[in-house]
Image 1 (cartoon, rainbow over the protein chains, first blue to last red):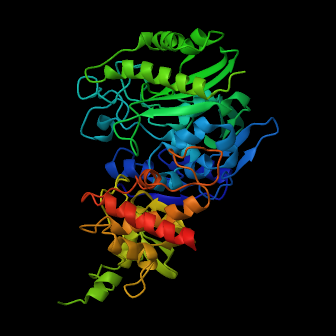
Image 2 (image 1 turned 120 degrees about the vertical axis):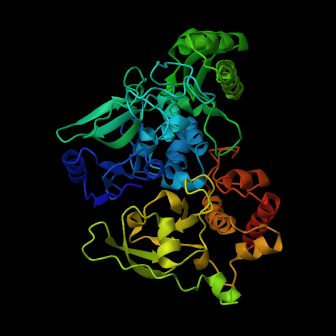
Image 3 (image 1 turned 135 degrees about the vertical axis):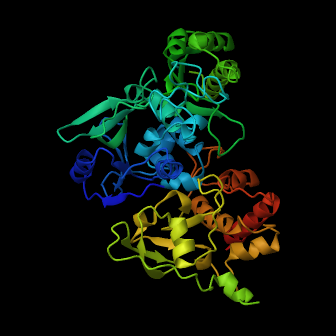
Length: 331
Length: 199
């Protein structure tokens, strides 16, 4: 691992000053992804700015009935906070489905959003990778790409975003609260992560001189009927092949509210707007669920080893909606 | 044999002398860690992981290095009572916190209930993952006691968790055993859980 200077920031302005002075500096929160990437030589900061003493650990109710998740609250504490368990089951489940208890105890909420792809070629510093080294090419497109993306890919990059939490935040219309040197700003979760396009080296729209302070969840009363369904090679401690975050509200067997997002299929959490539009106001039937899933996956492109993800994504959407339909007490 | 079993179990083995860092070396900084109730004042590079600090600089070799990338759980220790992978964090980030390793849980003469249960129920074969398994299980039982849910907990609304064998397996999935001693590991943990519940 490249040697680095360790700086402990006492407050947000000091943390921001440190990274503005040094463009190579990186913030560290839980570090579970950053330390690993530094050991592999994928990330090579010459300075690490520890932000763990900043006051962003709280989880609290907002005046409008929403909940604010501190950027530095740990994934384990967030998953098990009563407000999250009671009001946003989809988020609690997404968090509890990710990594292992040991990792969740270190991993922070902001760090979860900023974790990098687990594409093997991104991790292998001897392989070409446009995300790690812009312009070097993409090894995944013509190699082993079973875990790679089927939606929103580009010729530059077919990596997926690994977060489960971000997929749940997508259906909750969460916002990311960001502090810059001049001002604070709010980034809707859907605009936080990027599709690869011609700049796959940029995962998010967060600037180097910006710091996440919190993630805000709006009040979503019907999110009490929600779930996170994660399909993977083994039932625990594995990344998603395909996952679905779903929220459903029925009225007289008709779909009154529905929100869907897919994980494991794209460079960002994939909010399934086409499927949602196809479902709204329709009867909650398997046929309608399947039709909506077909609509969402219409633009999917398979590579040599990941064609199975297209059918898997459709079936996972149907199963998630069926499960929520059965759970919903008929009005 | 140069060292007694007791010395080995306690990690009480003289370390190979390391060249003392020169005072002028700017890469080395003072780091003070509180481990198993004792304070250790070290001179470390910031890039030294908590795992390497424990094993290579303090001589507490009970904590094991398996994968060194957060995939196996052999390096599990407790920080302020919570289980973490010591390979994925820098030692310098944990000054002022209470770190507990397997050496701090029990001694050969006075085993922790989980250590005793692992012997009783064949919770290991080669033993390499065992310190991590036991540290992890200690924290896991505390999580259950405070009502934490797992992914397979039937109701997120309930705060009372029934620790079934399936729950034990899900909650211990961060600790891999290449000998495949899982049956014994589950038995050991269930035994201590029931023992504690009966109290």
